[in-house]
Length: 100
Image (cartoon, rainbow, N blue to C red; front, top):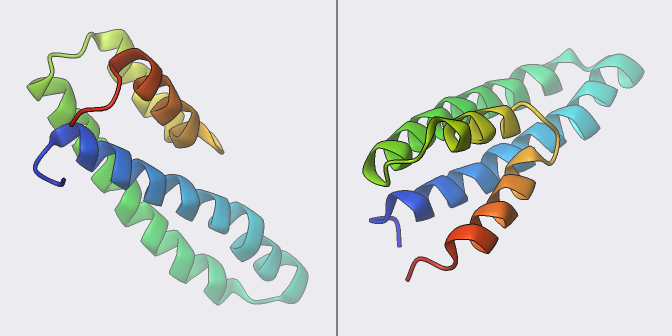
């Protein structure tokens, strides 16, 4: 499954999107409401690593599948929006179908 660049992008996208939601919905409230800045440090580092992996996966799949610049831009914009990677993945499934 991880041999396919598109599958790698989808998996990393789900993990990156989930880490962003954890950062925004759990770690930041813990920092500002409970005085626990460590939560943002830990989750932020994990999210940062997953973000870099997501960008690398977008570049890899865009080269291997010859994506148009508009789709690459959409994938990158999705990474900075809450729920963006999930919406982009749904769009890919609709337009490209399952990649078996």
